[in-house]
Length: 274
Ligand code: ZN
Image (cartoon, rainbow, N blue to C red; front, side, top):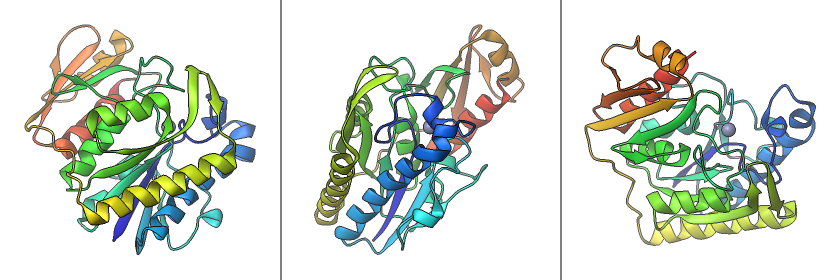
């Protein structure tokens, strides 16, 4: 069995501030890269406990260069560096991954009590809809996994992203490692407890999957996407992409033949929105 562990950073144990997830910040370098690596390692251990033979980690936050390879438990391999074709779920596209586990995720932009909530870019993106449904990074990445036939079995993060994940995948296992009380404050579990929880949840989720397959998330195609940018000049920039529709001052619409194409189009439009 091959498991993809896709990480982000805002939902990692102990994280509550932008400084902690900013590569330019001293605390990111001295403390938080160890924290993300430890949460990922807890999921690696859980996957191994459940009998996984191959594990590949997709390092998803910022420039995809957060996890410390020198501290990553073998036999996990690391997809690191940017840009990669499938970014936060890089490695899912080869047809050999059985299931995915999401570690350190955060709630979509505009959530109530979601630590560092945003959708892809906290500076540029106000809202994203797929087929008229508001979507955050969980849904976007789970849809790409689903396109490649890969179900998402588990997520770790705060209570709000855990609830968001259950809206998309009701049977998803969750590890709530902190209870957000605002966008920038949370009651965090001690590391020993949160990492044990991640390990145990990953083991249970993968063992359950080995007994009874979970359906991948499949969205109706062709997909209709809408991005609402934070300001109109960002939509002005994204509008130069051929085939898109300018809906209003801040919104751009697009269509895509499947979730993988929607993901690539979405990322392209966000890049253009400067
Ligand atoms: Zn992130």
